[in-house]
Image 1 (tube, rainbow, N blue to C red):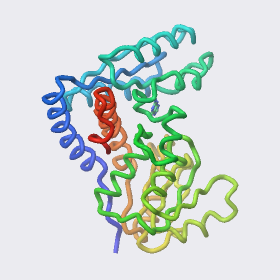
Image 2 (image 1 turned 90 degrees about the vertical axis):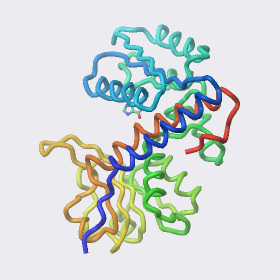
Image 3 (image 1 turned 180 degrees about the horizontal axis):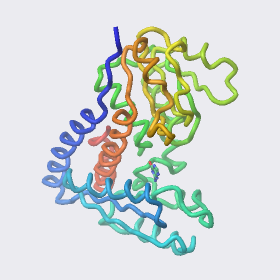
Image 4 (image 1 turned 45 degrees about the horizontal axis):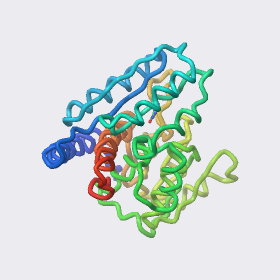
Length: 290
Ligand code: GUN
């Protein structure tokens, strides 16, 4: 039997519809329209597409979006001043500084200046810390999207063996914390892992976020494993995930495709985070948890 193919586009569309209703209720109750500010420095074509999609996404669910397009030559001091002004602006609830930034700007300095309650990316060390200790906070959007996907599929994570491949701050580490919070037994694998195949063989849930095309193959999987592919690798073959979809399909119980799997969830989670940020602004720390 072949695996169920997890339709990230459909799950994302349903989540956006749900969010549209939540935004409408929030606006009716508070008189506040949630607003996201996206800061883009320079003219990277891929980043421009992401920023445009974020803007469109906000409008579709009834939120405001402010796009701040800055030249690649902007100084670090000037950018820090812009972020600082956005922190103080009561009409902006969420702030996202699109990465990567030009090399003359210290990314860490910029991200750490963003007010944690407005940090819809969940990259600020305060939010990272809150995630680790299990407190309400903004969380990185891609791993949040993976968790929402699992929940939507009715996967009970509790007690399951989850193997995460990759230890990045954006996906590997936060998804590990999220799975742990839901009581999975989590193993984090990385470039120094001695026998990756043996680790993956144990897994009921595999999350691949390593940036190596087709690294996870069907022979590595336990029969029926749920396989979540976070990889986005641009190759001669086009967009390819970290999972070899063809060989995993007959072995997995369910699997995400690339594209059309995890990708579409990320923006839906960013929009959700903007509503959450607007909730924080009115002192509401629980009503809009993902
Ligand atoms: N560039 C690519 N993905 C992301 C993301 O999720 N957040 C930010 N800030 N920049 C990105």
